[in-house]
Length: 104
Image 1 (cartoon, helix red, strand yellow):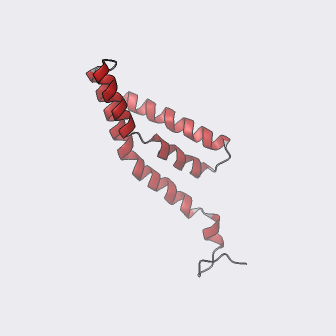
Image 2: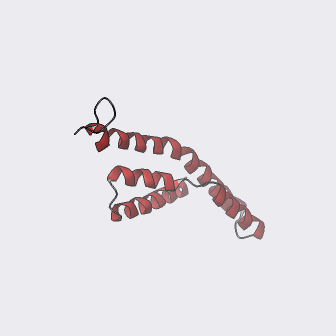
Image 3: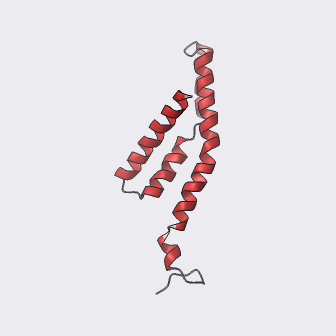
């Protein structure tokens, strides 16, 4: 489980740092970090090839598959939360009138 936490934090942290350096807002950086953290099919395919070549043992393979499953399942609710929080803070929303057009 420690591997899952460390892998998630390192990948999310790197994406968030990159977003910050690119000048994105905090919420946008968080959404980017959560979205990029999802691991899935590619990792499982690479792990399967590694297992068949003998590079990975069964324990390492299980960790990679667990990592792919956990991060793939946690990303949608976290991404939804990050984008919902971002939408509530949208400057266009606060300047729009009841017709949905920006007020002048």
